[in-house]
Amino acid sequence: MKRIYLAFVFCIVSLLTAVAQEEDMVFPAGLRFLDYNNKLPDNLLHTKSVVFVDVPVKSGTSLRGDWKALAKAGHQVFKEAGIDAVAYYNLGDVEAGRDASIKLAEELKGRQIENIILLSQVPLKIAGKHTERFAILITEFNEENSFISHGQTAYKEVAKDTEKLFKQFDKDIRKSGMSSQNHLIADQPEFFTGAGNIIKGRRAQGFAQDLKLDKLAVPQFEEATIPQNRPGGNANKNLEKEIEKNNKLVKRNNLTLKEILNDYPYEFSLVDPSKAEDQIRQEGYQFILMRLHTTGENIKEMLGYELNPAETDYVTMQQNGGNIKMRHIPAKAPVYKYYIKHIYTGDVYLGNPWDADETWEEALANYIHNMKKDLNIGK
Image (cartoon, rainbow, N blue to C red; front, side, top):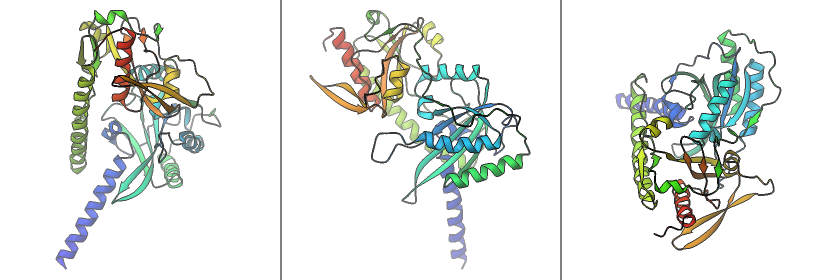
């Protein structure tokens, strides 16, 4: 009997641990390092908020799910609660790259955004079974291009479907006792595809001749850390294991990054990705390698390409040894695109032809090969 009881207790503890881990998994990695107190921000109903929507890629495709449908459902709930959600973005566009994040953060500050709402749909595999969870996270906007700082307090609610999620959220709003002072809330959500054109200087579909004179700064992939004020216990141990696993991948990526860059024809150095560009310039670098990761369509908008609504896919020129392959990638599929920026002027060098690809490794290799061809540099 004692053994049965202990086995039962072990199963309950394991289940609770699994649920805790499962609820953490409904948010992107950086957002798991927040202090969840399940308390709604005091100013939520009398200030402006922005909503980032996170949905999975459609099964069997490389295309995003319908994030706007989830946003529309959420907006009606937020409106009834008295939340003035003034803008909706796909999270993939928000996290597209450093230049995009900096510009978007400035725009949000200009619109006097106080809080960030993350509306999330995530597929999970629990005990070998495929399922999904829906979640709402609300926390303050830190007015920086990271949008949210590790360790800051946040509200979260998780459920198996949107009906249960929104019903519980409505209860939490009512229990808070807050009354809305937002009286001009839009009936429909306002969608944005990202930060718009992110180029501050000149735009060139080629390469800078001065690259042979100046060492290129290449931001490394960044390892994750647990903030000092994160609560301890089993949850922290689970996160430590997850971070350790993540950082092993980061180290492998940095080795691969350096290996691919060995084909870069000029001098370069890997730099700390957390450093501001002004600091990187003070250390003697004039150029920095930049990367965007979102749909090809949105990357083209961010980098000032002429968009043709009739194009359903884009042709990527890919080098394969001495051969050139043309690949057709859907315009709405997530891809990686590299470019080089002159730090002081903001001038960008995009390369030619279009070389975005489905993995960062292929995209970087394409960019370097096209550079060597454009500048007539042999191996």
